[in-house]
Image (cartoon, rainbow, N blue to C red):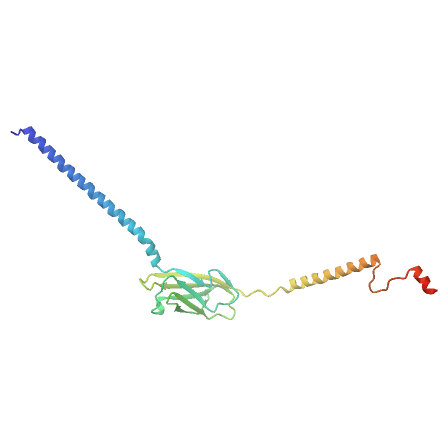
Length: 210
């Protein structure tokens, strides 16, 4: 026959078992949630390089950034890591500005499978100076925009310094003249005169008179 105490003990034991079950279940659910969150973070981190590669980047340019040119370039080239949008002229733009604020007319044409922009400028007669080529393009797939600038300068080679050349020539001529003078003095000091016959000795003179 079950006593009241026995019933209470069984009830307490059953309640403890149920509580333990629910606690373990909550811990398992929490562990699962943490695992899912960790996996999500790892997946996002793994996907970041792909996102970085997905946006257009400038790979190379002609002329190079900061280049100093002796004459205006016939063609300027901007090449990207992926094709750019080129369906309409509004998909890309180029502006060539000269130091001081003046702009130079420039036309752009997509080339090489739309991975490069070829630019040609209508250079002024005197193109000497510094320039900034500003550009804007859009990604062909996705439409993400990218912009930047390219700086370079044009300065024709300096003419030769006439004064320096004259001084070098004078120094060379003067050095040769000084050397000739030293040799002449040295010859006189030793009695050597190559253009005169050697002097007759006294004995040779007497023999000649007899």
